[in-house]
Image (cartoon, rainbow, N blue to C red):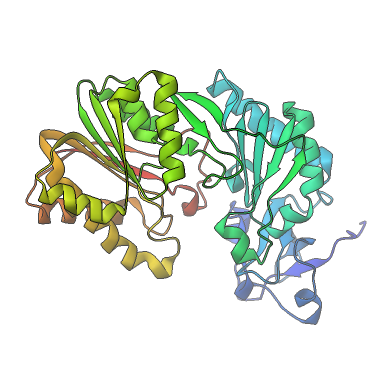
Length: 398
């Protein structure tokens, strides 16, 4: 038997290997034997993970500085990833997206679910934005970018270093251009009949949230002739879809003037400027002010940032979601609709639903739950990893 030239990472005797064998993609720091050799591994090193009996389990990317010590990449007999390895993974992901979408605007790589742990790649036509949120991917970024260009034909590749995961991995926060030239203006993206403007160099995350696409579409079905309020609106995700669906008026509320400007410019490109208004301000304060003024809307959407980005923040996050529901429910006309969203992976669907119902009840309203949405099919789930099912969208009729 030929010995692998790669270093070895070994599970502790009391750590059961069944989860890894069944597809769980993470190995935690308290599950592996750590000595001077393993602690000295360069973050991003590729190693072979063995069980306590020295049987190979998986090829892993290692980061001694992270709680996630190892991320499963492949079968243990496979050598260290190279450009060809990345091409295979990206081509498989591209095949799925090309079956789903007529135009090249989608999430191309959704981390563990697409076999590239910690990696996000969003595509905007000929432009791709990579978030390498794990040390192994950061170290192998040149091979990944070369493979991405070869498989997809994109002419511009940007590195976005703003992901929270990079902080947890001890990585830099330096954005860069890996191929081509960074766009000088936001990119127009057509979805659900609406036009969105994605700022891929200065916007939040990669510039646009593709994950809400199917939920935007469902909200648009409720929007014909409606007065719409979109809170935590970013670039107008729900509001612009509602206008495309025939809403009479839509109002965006967000704390970022830059995001609201992109929403206004999107409405202008749609010929809907006269039906969109924007308010810059704190979402909670604005919801309270609208309630005090007796304002009513036919469709209210609240899509906040992750209030519970970790398990430590779970209880505080649930209280925040309850507060959003309590403040927004009084703004819904009787017989109207309330959409409440969460992108916190630490809050599961049951807990989120409970928080929303408590808030609605404390506002003196009663609700029918008519639809439960999740991320679109370009954000596939890895069934063994609950965190990959982070997005929840609850549609209530009050």
